[in-house]
Length: 211
Image (cartoon, helix red, strand yellow):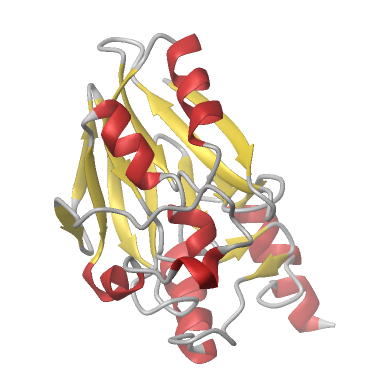
C-alpha cells in the first residue's frame, strides 16, 4: 500500500492519498485545498485517482474536491447527511482562497460500505457528531477519522449540526473498539493509535477517567 499525506490550507488539514502498489489506483481522503500540491503528490507517486472520499462536509475538507474531480475524473463520495454543506456561498469561504463548491456526489457513503481501491479495501464507519454525516474509513490497520478523533483530542460540536453526545458515542462505540495497534490518521495534526487514545485521550481515555 502507498500512503501519503499532503498538509494543505490555512487550517493545516491532512489530505491523504491511498494507493495500491499492485494496480496504482488511488483514492483521496478529504482534499481540502491547494489542489495543485495534491495533484503533484499523486503524480510523483505514479498513481491514478479513482475515488475522492470525504469524512465530512466542512469547507477545509472539501475545498479542492471540484478541482480534483475535474483533473482526475474520479468518483466523489460523501455521507448523505452532509450533502447540504456542499453548496457554499463564496463569501463565507474566503479563508480558503481556492475554494470551489464540489459537484453533486456520485455516491453516498453509509455504514458498512466497502471502498475498493485496486486490491485494497476499506470499511465505512458512521461516526456522526462533529457533523450529522461524519464517517471514518477503516482497513489495513488504519482508520481515517476526519475531525472526529485526534491525537489527545476530539472534534468540536459547536458548529451547525454538531452533537456532543453523539460524538462521544461514536468515538467510544465505533472507534475505540478497534484493535489497539490501529493507526489513527486524523484530519489535522499528528497520527496516533487507538490504544493510545483509549488509554490517554483526556476526553475519552480510560486512564484519565480513572484518576
